[in-house]
Image (tube, rainbow, N blue to C red; front, side, top):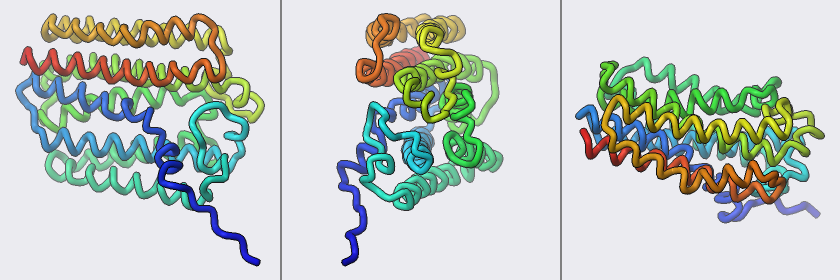
Length: 301
């Protein structure tokens, strides 16, 4: 008698997309759009397309990681959100197709933006997709070599924020570039902090499976220090953006209402499930950072 094929439920597919990570996609678009508004270059439809690209890439990364980690067996026994492949809820092939579908949505929206702005953006998009896949995919994934945080800072910080600003202003003038770089540092630092907290939680299982994340390399104590340092860097970025734009941007320090308690939890030695709330707090802190800074820039433009 043939066995029924594995079919995940809609709720399981939603959980596998890891919706709590989506603030990391929304935040750079918010921040970059705020800078565009300050520079009198706001183009709403381009901002919305940039948001589609960012969200689709984030979902694609999540499914791609689920697939790649699942087939390697590194998700076995991991604490945190359900993994579709690791839990057996979906086949590796189905999760891989879901990742490619999300990449396709990002590519389609990105092509429209490139056609309306500059064709060299296609190259940026291609590099972004490759970086997303090879985080845990391929024979030598860079996420297993301690480089995940660096790439998150580059693509979910610098590329996403500066790119969102550029597609709207179509200019590299310093009046827009300076605040977009500052915003990219702030958003990128908090995006990195999310990954640091995630990898801090997973040090025991990653060590056993041979996944050498930055947290595994640094060890528990220094990883906790890195998390706090990234929160401090995000606060410093608010000051930097305010210095080159308007002091209303100091309202962005309100992100510490969420990031402060998360940092105290990390410094307090929380482990395993105790770090799961930190992930949510950090993601919301990043979203709050971007929203407050963007609102201040839009009002002061």
